[in-house]
Every structure is written in structure tokens, then in C-alpha cells.
Figure 1 (cartoon, rainbow, N blue to C red):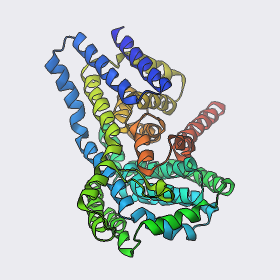
Figure 2 (figure 1 turned 30 degrees about the horizontal axis):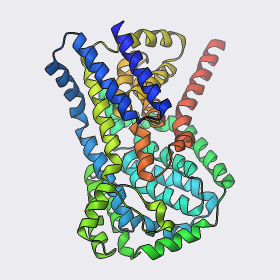
Figure 3 (figure 1 turned 45 degrees about the horizontal axis):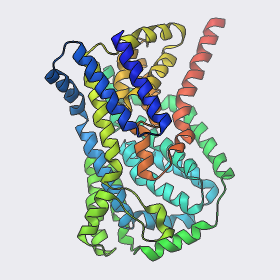
Figure 4 (figure 1 turned 60 degrees about the vertical axis):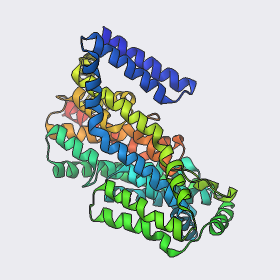
Length: 435
């Protein structure tokens, strides 16, 4: 009873903050207080409860460093002229009606290369959204295409951390999982491409792009050397260097360009890395953003929700949900039940890693085999986590690329995979029933 009441109060708090427009981090902090209170009621001392929280936070310390480094990269690449140069050189070469599908395909390629949605969004996603703004293409559409591509590789890449996590917790073969994921991605990939081709043909463009390009040419020194940071980043990624080191290299290589080519002072470079880039002219306003400050909210969310994991693991707080899971699994397929659990876990956890862990815990035993369970996780929670507006899984990539939250509604690939899996499973059941 106490567990159900605690989870219910947290849900009310979360929904209330969203409805009132209050930053989600306050609801999450309130949830942490509720969960810590529940742990205390179960007979745990204060030190024990704090230890539970630390056990949840400790595994994600690397993610926190990644977030801060990505923030630096997005700010410095703007100030160094990297993104402006790519915009200026690329816009005249890309037909507006093909830009949306190209955004999706380029983001797919980079995400497979890097294995991370965060890194893809901070590099190729940021570039594509900036180009879209210059071409007059709706930002939600460009952001949705970029987010879809970013999660394509986050789900399926030889260096994907989420794919490695799923393989580890399900005790399955990583490369066998990749092969199975490739099969279930074919139809969603074709569907996504079709949608983005049609959307690109229908999307309106404006004549404002020329003015923005002129403004960028005037505001930045677009020496070819400004391309060094992205070339270095993609070369290191191709060599499968640790992604944190790759992004750090992108940050460090941008500093001398800011100093020597853009004529900035060291204090200005530090300010941009910390607070983000501030455009100097109205024509370049689309480039403003980035910096460590842009990621502080995400860091707070990761710390808070990761603390939940330790409490969930060491108490029976989720036992109230297990009965619901069993009832759901008895009425629908294993994948559909896993998908429902994934949606709930993603809304509660607010980050992909914890959502994967919770979905695994609650859906364990629903699938016929461990490999089926791994595929169910990959086709559900890994993608659904990116569709929750208050989750860092989708909101951080969108923030780093400068796209609005409405872009989630147009992230076709993230919807297509679970919908195609559900439709296929229903077809199989109908055929089996009629056989």
C-alpha cells in the first residue's frame, strides 16, 4: 500500500509540474524526497538511504562528464566558425526538397559511426538544424529527422553503449543482437525515409536563408582550417576511439581556432565554453547556444533519477507494479507488454539507462528466450525513452542541436520500430489462430 501511494504521489507531482510549466527537475527532486522517505519507512537509516542513492549515481558518473563536454563542444564549434562554415558551404549545394531526408541519412551515418545520440546531435544534428534554419525549413521537421537518425545508431551500432548495456543485462551475444536488430529495422527505416522525402517536398522554404548566409560570412572568418575539429572527430570515431575522448578532442581542437582564426581572447573562449555562444548580429541569432550552462539541468536530472535506481533496487518499491505487469502480459504479446512497461519506465526514470534497467527488471520472463527479451528491449525502451519530453534521452539531443521539443512528434523512426513490431506480432498471432 505504501509503495503504491508513493508512486502515485510521484506521478501526481510530475504531471502537476508539467501542466503548470514548472521545470521538471523540481518534480524529480520531490520524487527523490518521496522515495527516500519510503526507504526510511522500510527501516533503513539515513546513512543507508544515502548509500542507496550513491549506488545509483556511481555508474553514471561518466555520463555526467559526457554531458558537460558535449555542452562545451556545441558552444565552441559555434564560436570557432565550424557550424557557420558548414552552413555557408552546404546550403547552396543542397536542394531544399531533399534536405530533410539528407538530415535523417547523415545523422544515421554519424550515429552508427559514434554509437551515441548525444554526440550525433551535438555534431551533425546541430549542423543540420542550423542549415535548416537558414533554408527556412521548419525546425521541428529538421529536428525530428535528426533525432530519428541519432537514435538509429544509438540503437544499432558496434560501439553503442545502450546496445552493450542490453547485451550485458540479458546475458546475450552482442553481435547476434545487432544482426537481429538489423532485421527489425528494415521496414521502419524504409518508412522513415518515405515520410521524410514527402515531408521535404511539402515543407515550405523562405528567402531568408540568403540573408543569414551573408550574416555568417560577415561575422566569421571561414578559413578552411575551421573544418579541422569535425574532421578530427569523425576520423577518431571511425577508428573507434572512446567517445568521451572523441568529443574532448573536438573541444580542444576548437580552442586554437577560436583564438587564432576568429580573433577571440582566452577569456572569451572560456566564457563560451561555460555559458555558451551569444550571436553578435540578428542574422546569426540561430547560432546562439551551447556551453556547460545548457547542460546543467540535464546533469541535475541524471543525478536525481539515477539515485532512484539505487532505491528501487534495494527496496520493494516496484513490487506494486509487478502485478500490473503480470496482468498485462496475460492479455497481450510479450513485446506489447514490454512496450507498455517501457513507456512507464521512461516517464518515471527520465533517462535511457535507468529506463532500460527498470524495463528489464519488470519484463524479465515475459519473452520466450533471453535473445527475444534483448530484442524486445532494443525495439521498445531504447527508442521510447527518446520520446518523453522531460527525459534527457530526447530533450538533451534536441537542446544541443537547437531544435524545439515539438521535434519529438516528427521523429518517425522512434515510432516506426515499435509500431512495426506490434503490427508484425499481431499478424503472426492471427495467422497462428487461423492455422
